[in-house]
Image 1 (tube, helix red, strand yellow):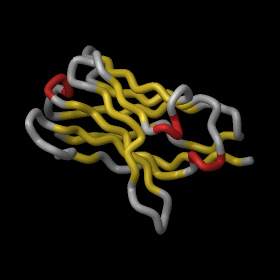
Image 2: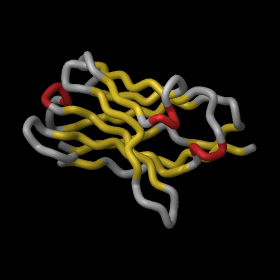
Image 3: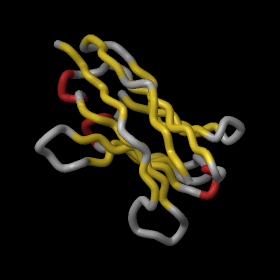
Image 4: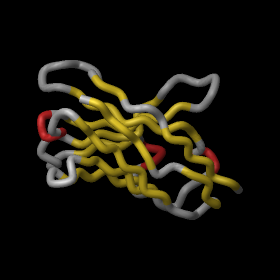
Length: 118
């Protein structure tokens, strides 16, 4: 499955952005979907996860209450709504797909840059 992340940009602190991860080749219904982010010189960290059915989500503590992951089967997309953005949210954001039974993501999209100015 090929993943394409989009929606990044420059926003002021307190603002919002919505990232979208679109898939081609296969339906995303068969995958748990992740969002990760990475700052140059630091390890990539998970932002959150949504289960295959969308019934379960997980978020890293630093984004809880501000970020929301959702999925749209009809569009074959997974979105990351980011509200109340902080300068420390600045990073390259990646979406990733994980198959059933695997322990880590199997497919990665290219990143999209999010920059939050103070």
